Image (cartoon, rainbow, N blue to C red):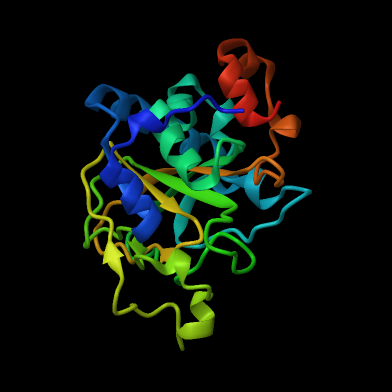
Length: 252
């Protein structure tokens, strides 16, 4: 079980997660960390090419359609120590466990970059059905590798929608369209946003000539199947460097 981290969140941060369904943890990555992560991502995108994200899209346990209009990478747990803090940072774990409780594990650590002119997603949730408020199963975080702006396709959220008891497609004629209550997560690079994955959310269109880059550190309760099952993918090099707590979070 994860050791208690609740003291790392302020009362207002807890209230935001509970009532709105999301919170900004501020800028948890400094310029040096950002540049190291960006460089490693650049190398991986070049190396993997069209196969980028194949661990997620070809999993023999969970199948996901490959998204057009975005560069993807998956299984970052096993692709460099620069990614370790993106699923072990104490404040991140405090926020995730506030939503899901202490019995959590990492479901996947993936990279997504909306390409110029692309990136629009339907408003959606990251679970197959509606859940009872307070019985949440999944929770996500976005580590911003670029400034998120209206121009470059910042993620949109509908505050409080994790409490609606409805899926977007049950309420909206077209979930690709804007919702009257949606907001954009606009923030500087290095910021970490945590949101309840039962909250309605989606990417918006990137109207710039540069990709809009981010890493998603996605968690679930321990009884659920991981998007990227680490018992299948874990490498000895990873095991040799990570802490006991990280080992537990990966369920290996």
